[in-house]
Image (cartoon, rainbow, N blue to C red; front, side):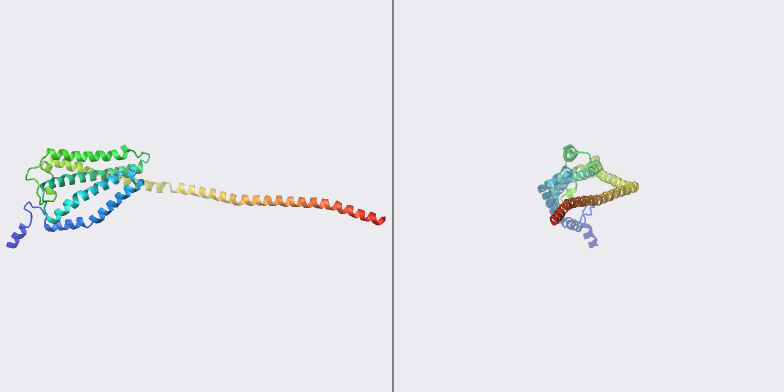
Amino acid sequence: MSHNLSSSSSLPSDGSIETSLTRTIKLVLFAVPLGPSLMCSLYIMLCFVFESNLRRRTNHVMIAIIIIDLIELIGDLIPISLPYLYTGCIHNIFICLYWVTGNYTLQGIAAWYMAWASIDRYLLIFYQLLRPTFIRHDLPLLIIGIFIVSWYIIITFTHPCSEDWFDKTKFLCGGPCFNTSAMTATIDWILIVLIPALLIIVVNLVLLEKVLFQKCRRLSGSVRPTTKKYRKRLCHRQRRVAAMIVIPLHRQKHSYDNERNVVEGQHLNHISKVIPVQESESRLRLNTQTI
C-alpha cells in the first residue's frame, strides 16, 4: 500500500509522463550527438566564410538553415534545454518566456526554410534558365523570417500570460500562452507545422516522380537512336582514321616516285654528257695513231 502511494506520488500531478527517467533518456539522446553536430555546423560555416564558391545564391537557403540550427543549438539547447533535463526545473520565469518564444520561432523558421529548400531544388533542376537573382533566392528567405517573427510577436502580445501560466517543472514551461485559445493554437499548427510538412512531402514526391519518369522515358525511347548515332560516329571516325593513314602513305609513295624520277633523269643527263666526251676522246686517239 505504501509502495503504491510512493510510486503514484513520484508522477506529476497533471498526469504528464515526464519523470526523472524520461528526462535522463532525453538528456542522453540530446547530449550524445550535440558535440559532433556543433563541430560540423561550425566547420560548414567556416567553409562558407573562406570559400567564395560556396557562397553562391543557390546555396543561400542551405546557409540559412545551418545558421538557424546553429542559433538553436547555442541559444536554446545548450543553455536551457539540457540544464532543464538535468535538474528538472527552470529557476527564472523570464527564461520561460524566452525559451518558449525562441523555440517556437526558430522551429517555425527552420520548417519553412526546409520547405522552400525543396521548392528551390525543384526549380534548380527543372528550370535551369531561371537566373540566380536576389528575388529568386534571397527574398523568399527574408519574407519567411519576417513572417514567422511577426506572427509570434503578434500572438504573444495578443494573448498575455497569466501569473500562474508557466510551470517551471515542465518542458518549455508548459508551452506558450496562446495555447489557451484553441483557434489560435490550431492556426499556429496549420501555418507552422502542417503546411511546411505537406510542401516538403509533395514537392519531393513530385521531384522523385518526375526524375524517374524522365529516366524511364530516356531508357525506353532513346536507346536505339543513341545506338545508331554512336554507330554512325564510330564509322565516321574509322573512315577519318583510315584516311589519315592512307593519304600520308600515298603522298609518301608519290614523293618517292618523284624523287626516283628525278634521280633517273639526272643519271640519264650525266650519261648523255659522258658518252659524247668518250667518243671525242676515241676519235682523237685514232687520229694520232694514223699520223
